[in-house]
Image: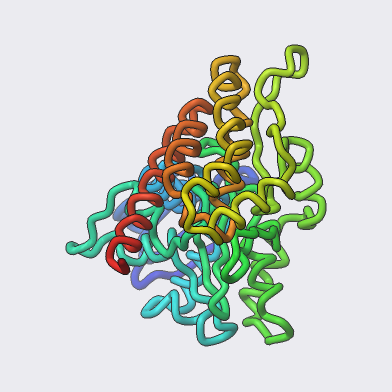
Length: 349
């Protein structure tokens, strides 16, 4: 039994088990004023953990409802740390410390309760997006004018790693397994606050980026010009799902470049004859459930430096491929990407 004075009362705590206590309030003059017995809950540390888990689930559910995609826990833990230590300007701290401007989902969390902020799902997915960022690429941060993103191969899967879009190029490069590793990578020797360092050490994925790339590579059916490649389900028994293009990447690259260098329409038709033939084959491939063929060609054109000259091809191939692959959200995002780029091109003409 332990005793604690509280004004004119004494608090008696009777330990009965490891996880429950009985408490009794009695007056100090021995005349019983009030007696209350109750079973205490879990220890404080465990109650705090339960509370944190509820907050995490609430924030992640909010994000997943708003964006209609899944998130890993790293987004929550970083957001929680920023709002706990820098509540007035949570997105400014890492910008000042290591020039890392968090965006996308973090901007949503910051602004979602403002009365003037109303976004559709597509509005959210277009936040901070650049041309040649496919739907799988969800912008999450910017550092030294380089855009970083969470990479999901399907809308219903969680991010597999963090990627970087190369400047003025459609090439996309995996750089970190999660946001903890990204912060450490970009800190480049800058001392991080001890509490943030502890969070990273405690929560960062044990898997290295090379291991994550190797695991994903088993599902990649074609590299495309963005180098990160595409993932398409292929039936091992029937081999349905993907068939290769009817031309090499070298031949495709040459066709696209040569077409953009001539104004002669007949010459363009001659150069693109094998390209048009490949598109015809894609129709047959789609009829036979080899959806990866059109996906590959569409992504190659979208990732190529001449992509803006082939908007019609991109529009016809990629949204259709995503629909056939049952990635409806990505089909909508791709269509929106093309719509916004068409508007920019029209304004500059």
